[in-house]
Length: 290
Image (tube, rainbow, N blue to C red):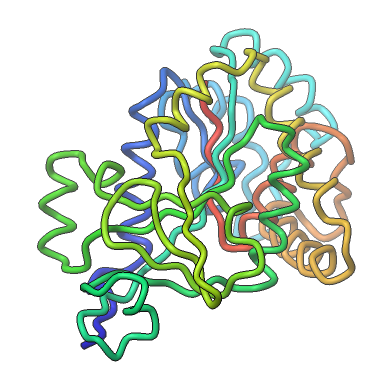
């Protein structure tokens, strides 16, 4: 028997992300661009009124862009706002996976477990991008896969009510899955098997990753975002990933500004757009934490 998880990946992602934010004194994650003025869908502990006050003029109306401050001014504004925000330490790049639950001996990975297990596929071009991002981040980010160790909707809502979604998830570091096409596991934590040639993967739990995050040096919010964008840019060193990223970034920019407005490179707005475009292109979510 093979059953795909009953709940949607987005639902699991929402509960996981909310719990992640609660583990840190401050956190930030850009999401859907329709939210607010710079597309920050989840801005957990940030004083949102500050961003909305300064960035409200960037929203496009049905009749075209509204008048107001220029994009070139926002880097200075971001620097000023950072003075009033807590410092940041670490990034999580998370690719969420909706697993299959395999309960029969005909499952391709049954030999590794001899009992029911979960599994998901690893997409080659996404995996390659995540591996390079891990290297470019120089220890200041965890690039991980997160997948539930349960598969029914009832289980999801039960663990979500207890705020145990992260606790009941399996975490695999992207760099550990190099050269594999599938990953399987039987329970929460950091242990699983990568396939096709079976390889045991023993990685940190999310609690252990949290300790690593809190040990990193603190820097300002603006500088933290700029560093994350720089790591992304340096990771895009092959033609395919760069082309996919550039296509995604064009869409992100077109949703934010009018076609005849150029986004200044190297600044805060460009960094935010870079992060969001990477997340769209390679199906990951970004969380900055402090």
